[in-house]
Image (cartoon, rainbow, N blue to C red):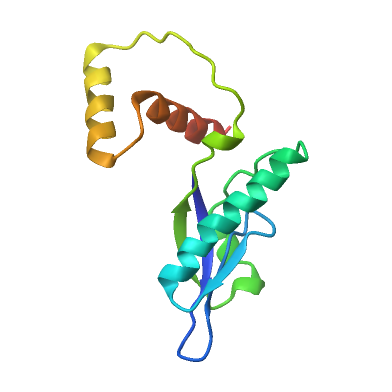
Length: 134
């Protein structure tokens, strides 16, 4: 799932900071943007694991343009980080799906070209993205 991030750029004397506006408590910093990014992914997973362990829902990502209006982030940069929510969705269940052959081939091509784990992962991610807008 793609989550927006707010980026407070650092310099030679200050770290780069990253905040997930939609995942309260998921913040990170690093001496470089790359380090801050890696730390941000780890921070998001830690917070999501804590939420799930308390029986709370996984927050849905909001829109960058909505977050940009927040005065707390004035002057910050923006980006997106893909967070794999699979570990927090519960036990998998097998289902049978019937799709046209051309759709299956297009899914398989997408999976191969974009390094998606599997056809099932693609379909699960597509469903979650669609359900996010409900």
